[in-house]
Length: 112
Image (cartoon, rainbow, N blue to C red; front, side):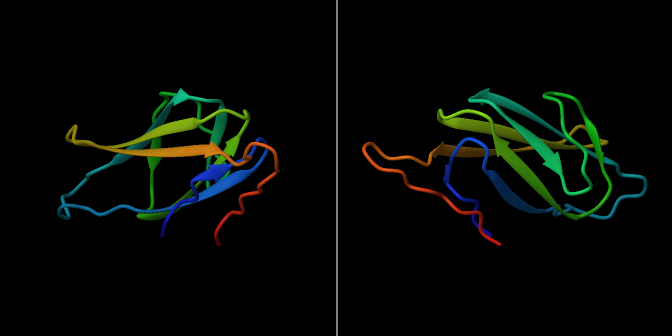
């Protein structure tokens, strides 16, 4: 499902994720972390865990949701990293534009 492109300060965007495994290897564990090179915001897991940048958190299910809440009115980018216990890393980058256009307010809405 596509992720919204525009966001305003205080708004939350839902990011629906599915972990696609390359195989079913015994005792494979996954972790998730994020980094925010542009803007300011918070990232939260659907179980309520609020992520701290670059801290690793166990990923215990294959289908999950992330919630990004904007804390600034600038362009924002977050990089999400999922790593398996063998060291293989998958990076996903999400970019959000300020949802306001010059001269008028344009509100972006989360897709459900």
